[in-house]
Length: 503
Ligand code: DUC
Ligand code: ZN
Ligand code: ZN
Image (tube, rainbow, N blue to C red; front, side, top):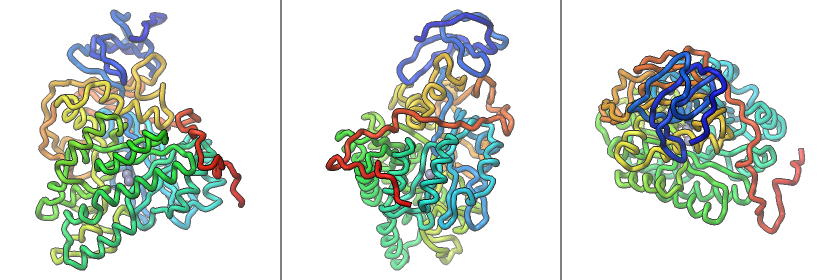
């Protein structure tokens, strides 16, 4: 337990909770001053406000490093989840900060893509940062725009190895890796093999197989495993640290574990959908399976325990939401509502889109922590420190926010979740705060729910009511940090990324 300090009065004292950090649990009071944690100890002096946390578990506020919010598409549409609604949902579910994506459209410089996107984010009630998506890594983008973004605190780049308007070739991916190396940024990768998926889609459609379940048949684990292997191998060639997003199957996790064993700096993320849902959800009748269409696809039921095992053995470091909401009554039936699909506007006789034309994504920003608390902590699969590592501490470490987010320690932002570990709830979309008309977890019983959520010292959620106002979230600029340093190992000792690009 860190030493207590008693130098002046506190704004708020959370008294007598079971505090959980990434390393340990202990009973203590936690005092807040000026939005930061000021002291942790026993019998701390009174604060201007006091919260009795006896019987509650106190964790750091969640940091969700993978959320698609209010993304505009090149065709002119905008995702229905706004920063105001998405951040209300985040806070209600215990997530006090998130990192979302600034798009780049092919053929456009970053500066001329999605005008006003960063300004829209100022409506957030939770703290927020950005990953920059790179779809068109021209010299102008890599040598001028990306350095300027990194200097402004956008210190991670996202690349796709699939999706038609988004994917990079291997050569483009290498250029992005080398640029990130020079700038000290992390690269995050969506790993699926574009051509393999396209080949399977064409064959499935030719065979008349068009149901949502065939979304999974089009992109089986081998398609993810191959791309994960390739993403890691090319990162190894450049000696650039990467994170593999949304690992859905053991085969892909195994590639990460093998690379780590040979000293590669690679980390893995999974999501609640891969721990709790399966192809059985995709097989639901009456197009209901579309609610579970996301990529990588949901896997056979038995795969879920293998992903839990990869959490237990430390291969997977982070559970993010990959929140990407498309309402069932509207956007899920409209292939034009998203760039996250792989196909044209094929329709079935019932008028619904074929599996490949259904926008990919599930909404989960609010349910991420309660699901992991219930399925993980309450069911005894993980302990509280592991829960903290998966939901905030590791993301803070990986994305340059260590010491500020994801920790209960003096000096850190006072972002806290006070959990009632015995609260019994059923997830109901009607009670969630997101803008989407369904949740794939409708009716699921969970044990444990956030009773109070504190963001930078202010009570942001009390008894389910979101009190934080739109615009009260802050942009999280991320500076240089050691974790993204290269290992110093390159083939033949020739460091190609260190050679300045020829413009
Ligand atoms: N996967 C999804 O399911 N939605 C958004 C993007 C992604 O990679
Ligand atoms: Zn992705
Ligand atoms: Zn995503």
